[in-house]
Amino acid sequence: MTAPIITLQDLRKTYQMGDVIVHALAGVTITIEQGEFVAIMGPSGSGKSTLMNVIGCLDRPTAGRYDLDGVAVADLAGDALALVRAQKLGFVFQQYNLLARQTALRNVEMPLIYRGVATEERRQRAETALRIVGMGERMQHRPKELSGGQQQRVAIARALVGSPAVLLADEPTGALDTRTGAEIMQILQQLNQRQGLTIVLVTHEPEIAAHTQRIITLRDGQLREDRRNEARSVAA
Image (cartoon, rainbow, N blue to C red):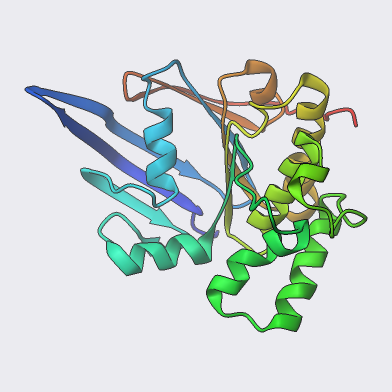
């Protein structure tokens, strides 16, 4: 049996705010298997954003163990942490964060440019990623020429181009209308079901979480519920 792709053991994160110590994470233990599609939910202040930042190697836990795809991450810092983040993770955010003056293709190429990937290889990989998300006909369009849903597809392609072990999606449908959000969820489901991509998604919307395989609920920095979910298919 293969090891879980994500293992969090007694993860803790505290912040000092004046004289008050805030326990953003208070002993969270979770394992996520390769190929799972997991939603993290919870009210404001529950710790879900902090947990996503720790999983995404954007922040370090105060205590506890974090293993990501066989790498003990919790004790890494600086360049080592940045390298794991670049090699193992892909990110999709509520805001698309595309470069306004660059084409969709160039935006998707960017992570590979930073890695020093040769021009021809990165072009091929970027084109493949854009086709996967249904943007094969819009590669030369700039963000202002694309709808919000199309921009999010480009952002997903950018997250995929580095062949991440885990895709992290933070409120990926938050800036979209219901129909367009459903289209984005369909793309994520297809990536999970057809390519076996592990996806961890943060959302406050139950109807979005309902399309994942597993729902983890946090409250006051603690794990309150972890249940399997019979994920629905999303209409195109």
